[in-house]
Amino acid sequence: MIPRQTLAEIARRVEAELTLQTASDPLRRNLFTPLARALAGAVHGLYGHQDWIARQIHPMECDEDVLISVHAAIWLPAGRKPPAAASGSARATGANKAPLPAGEQLARADGALFAVVDGVTLPDTGAAAATVRLICIQPGAAGNTEPGARLRLVNPVPGINGELEVLTPGLSGGADMESIDELRARVMEARYNSGQVGRAQDWELWAREVPGVTRAWAAPKLLGQGSIGVYFVRDGDPDLIPDAAELAAVQAHLEQTGTPFSEIYALAPARRPVNFRIRLTPDTPATRQAVADALAALLAREAAPVQSGTTTPVTIPRSHLTEQISGAPGEYDHQLLAPAADVVCGVGELAVMGSVEWL
Image (cartoon, rainbow, N blue to C red; front, side, top):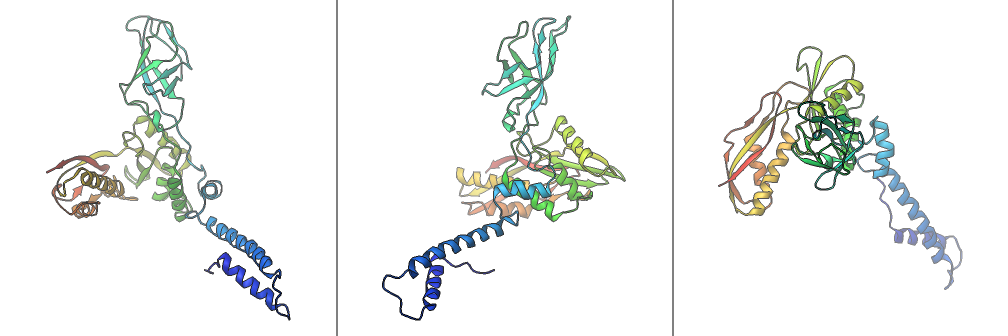
């Protein structure tokens, strides 16, 4: 790599070279100095532009706009993942035969707005209740809503009670626009695993093209010869384990994007809580939080329902847990009483943070 000269160094060099071109001593008020500084400024700007061009060549160092418009467009057919709107079902009640038209808006307690996707009419006999399909008007993870939440009609609808109850599993599938760091990581992975011919890494990359999907693990032959199982999670959701609608979305995307030579199964891992009992020195709220954050980061990094590309389950060594606690800011000493052994998971089980008991 050629070292870049500073503006002052370029100016001194140009001035010296201009002086050498004359046979006489320079005059007191000559033009060499201002001319040298002007040329140095122009050359320094060109060097800066060349530096910028060099940085844009590789997606790890390029600017955000170049990453989106150039590298993502080349390596990711679908580009940056857009925000996705949460959707699901709610229970409407009221008078028999009362209609609830499509497009009616409902508001959550915090002001988030939802719309009726398909209009319904309450039954003409028996309990006047119906299931209504809703979608969040503003795409993003903020639209995800827990089951049991109450949504109120923005405008009264004759014969329909003003509140609707969100049904299980809630309003889900909402995701924010993919962050630049996540996009950069996907571009780098696509470059590293170029080709996309149906290897395990390709299936994982395809699964993460779905908005909201953050981690994925492919397991060839999981359900027999010719099958491919793809586990995935959504770390940005209140519950990282995908529900039926989110499974269906990934299943449809894999069937459309992946190779046609496999039986494809989009799968949700089973939660495997890891409960901790820790004696900490010094035992302060800040140190406790640092240790809990460190353990959560370790599980997010090492836990998996299968080892990628295999059907082999994952074991997290206990020594990794103690090492992570020791590296937490503020920790001086500790005793890890539970788990007392390695964290052993079965196929399809994903280790997640459970309870932490401080002794």
